[in-house]
Length: 338
Image 1 (spheres, rainbow, N blue to C red):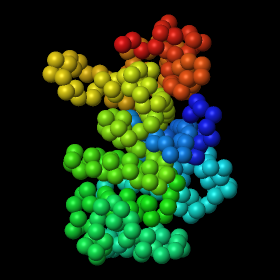
Image 2 (image 1 turned 90 degrees about the horizontal axis):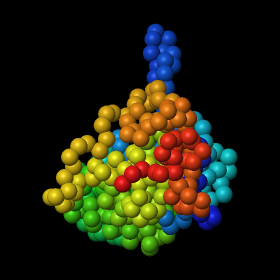
Image 3 (image 1 turned 135 degrees about the horizontal axis):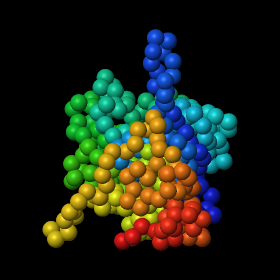
């Protein structure tokens, strides 16, 4: 959660999604996968919030919950002063929150022309001049509508298709755009072009981004704050410069330590993190990271750490007993050693 007094554009509170695992002759629920378990955060207007974490931590499920592709089990999603399901319908939410997916080809209908794909959402929502909107946005993302409007997705490169997906999201004039690994499948040169395009569009249209990626350098370039997820929970949230200079959670430290170094004298002698994440069907009690943490104490195995500021009034929030003076951890208050 944000530690500032600025009123957020988007607020997420205690978001949960558990997927049932059915089995047996009657198809009864045998267990549940705790994909997202109590996630909370705020995003201010015009801000880019980067979400990072290893595969399976719940990043993409969180994104799908935000746009209503997956129904949430618990929690509130508040856009402005309107709560989804109470003050605003899913149809209306789709106008305000749009998403750009990782697979640029699978997210486009192969039987629709590029122009029709971009204009489709505006037509469904009854917006004025959907074709005109689509053509203007095609030109804005760098694709000549006279040349590309009648083409089909298979006739375009990956970078061109992703530009089309960005235009398709913006045709609805959304307030928030969720980008789920939107540049991870692109060549580095094309990735840089798309990142610069996203930055320009944010400034031009006053957009707010939620940017999901495995690439920490990309997240650093485009984000204002970074949220770190582990096994369905938020473990750290901080401004990008703060988290880059000081990783408060041992898991965040391991993610940053795994980044490839350009310095030939700075070689990784041993893996920064060993072992696989625990099974999300039955996560361990207490801190979910304690089974892989070098600083785990007895309190970590029985007491769940709450997300809170590292210091009073700090915008750097962390869920770790190392930073909780009341936890009883033998290293409490010392944090993660450098």
